[in-house]
Image (cartoon, rainbow, N blue to C red):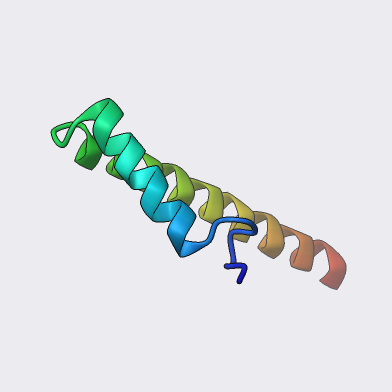
Length: 60
């Protein structure tokens, strides 16, 4: 079963989280999650802005 992230299945995600917990420790994970979430949010905002700009150009 594939998810929306391509080859990342729930099992792979859990294994990745366990490895990250071992490497970074429980104290750093919230900071890493916040940074990752912020990066994803910025990417989505940039992507949405590009779509709107493209639609504006098509209408002109």
